Length: 88
Length: 200
Length: 253
Image (cartoon, rainbow over all chains, first blue to last red; front, side):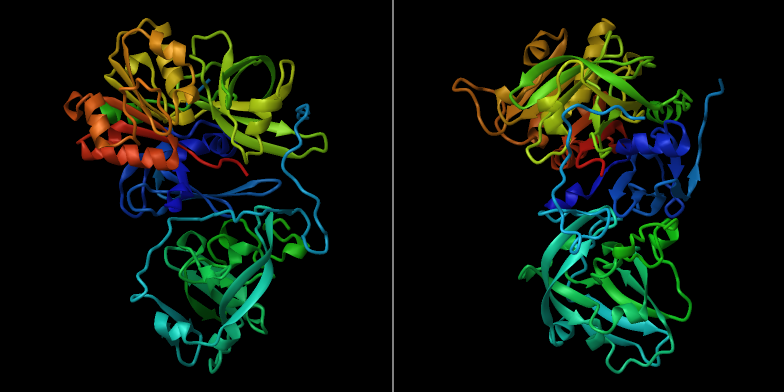
């Protein structure tokens, strides 16, 4: 079944997310806006289409969409994200 | 400035610029990209619908769809992620055939698929022999990972417009950006003008 | 209770995770298909076992390619090491696991990937399930465990095509207090009495520990392997939340 290769664990997006958010994001808990389930970003499912889509591992709804343009990332964020960012 | 990695060449081949749009490279395999999981709608539940700003919606079951006149043709396809695949062979129903008898004032179409994928295309880009709903690739039934049982095929635009697992076309009065168009990708997507993103 | 704490405990460090130029210091053949690159990395901030780096190569005409590779070295090691397996149709791996020589330069970004990590203080028992080159981040965890002199109960189940495809073979048999089990799927030595098929629930039940021991489980390898192993583990009663997975697939574009 080749369709299993369609997605990787969100952990694999760690580098892209560092570039977008300026911080390590894979441990961030995300509450899905559809099903309400909470899962770490690293446990979500990362799909590679034209851009990158991160989906809730329980219901499949979109958590994050990233288009990488030459001069910027265009990012759409859904659901509730709780970030704790260390202060220097 | 990135350092040069001695001896690294990458995988690129000579390209014919009359066949290959700017910034693209040719592949021999058929990469699978997807914004979401592969749907598996049973054929006895599948339908294709033209609706929205039309006088009367029309719909075909899978059997009815297969009974429509088809064409087999060869085209090049170009993905916004920079790969191009030349001389791909498809069999399917021309969108012109699907639009026979459809009355509409609308200029825009949103193609929608199983799952949450949509893409928007001007009606004139789907007609005049420029688009099909295809069910066969390379003489074989279209595989689910490539959009089977049927996908939209609009080869003159970037391949994200060729919606996999397509289930219908919604005619719209206003242009309504689809899944990727709303998220940073070009609204029209002409590979020959390298219209990949909003910034192009 | 503890699982929730593991999920929520890490605040995000605002460490500068930027592209750095690294120099290859040493190249070590692990198998005919795989090599370890030992790197000199200026100002390396340190890492946690299980993390990976993004590697970026630049050709003379400016063309760039990027892929992710797991860190093989323990956080306690002096130098950063990556183990790379050459994929026949790969664009980057044939270069890194073939052409690269000491003195060569490329860029890395990291360390990244806090979700698939283990520290000794996370405790155990630890169950590590590796498919082929999926062993790399799990080896970093075992090396970290050894460097800390930890006696956390640890088991490794490794699936490989043959013994000749196993990375770090000698080191694995010398690891203190780690129970290592192999399943060889394509070729076995004549006197082999280990497993000889794809990882399934029966093998995992054998290797243990039982779900009632509340193990921390890490599964890494190709997508199909991880899928099968994770499903088998859940069927044995393990909590899905206790299973961290890292699927290897085509990365970078």
